[in-house]
Image (cartoon, rainbow, N blue to C red; front, top):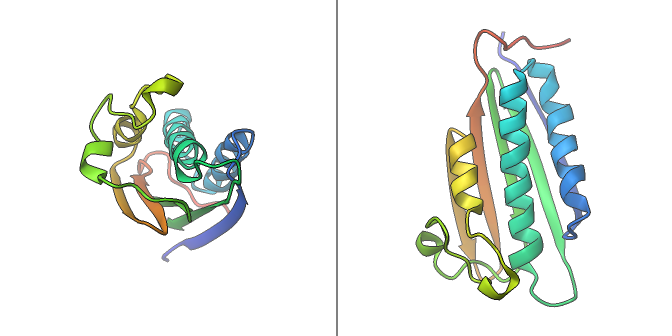
Amino acid sequence: MKYSNYMEVSFKALSVNEGFARVCVASFCVQLNPSVDEITDIKTAVSEAVTNCVVHAYPTSVKGDVILRCELEDDLVTITVTDKGVGIKDITRAREPFYTSKPSSERSGMGFTVMESFMDDVQVSSNSFGTSVRMTKKISASSCAVAG
């Protein structure tokens, strides 16, 4: 039997909501019975993606929304973090380790590198109307057991 489920939430692009996003995705993914390491990897990647929205998508004091979607298909977790902000001008450059468009704010420039380290695949699409980061991770067969 093929297992399929999803959830989607939206919230204001504020740094205080980064923790909410981590817990929300972790709680949803528990139904696949991931290992502690797998859930930690997922939470870290979500944290980086949401932080990118908070820091870069809405450069003015008016903060827009972040849309967080998590899909489960058998043993595959797909997480999409989307904003409707200013977009990324050069995705290739933005994905380079240590590159930051905000060096004055002491950013490390490691967001995409961290996401790529903890997830199996990371895809980024962006234009002047927003950015979408799609990350996937396969939950190990030894730990994957659908609840319910």
